[in-house]
Length: 97
Image (cartoon, rainbow, N blue to C red; front, side, top):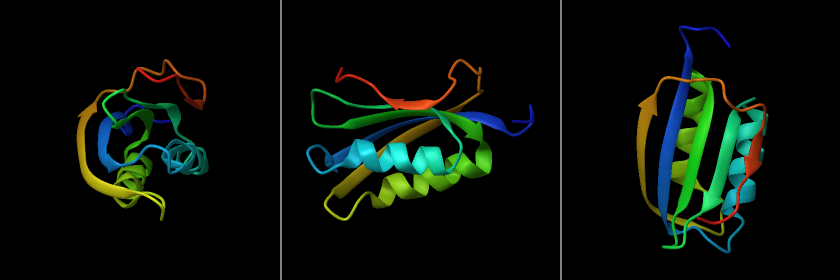
């Protein structure tokens, strides 16, 4: 990861996104894009994503978050960009928060 392109994406996905394989969809997408970070369900029914990698790869993940797996219905994706800090070694699923 180059310093100039490294970024962090923080996103919250709302809609019918729990119980439909959304976290595994995100895990597969992040791994295919060589991203690090995590995905987890929120108690309010949303899915939260924190990912680091090259900006174009994160933008590709964001497009996939807006689409979701075929069994889901994505109502909204709120996101923000931050500087990457390299704290993750891989992408994983975290416990519900």
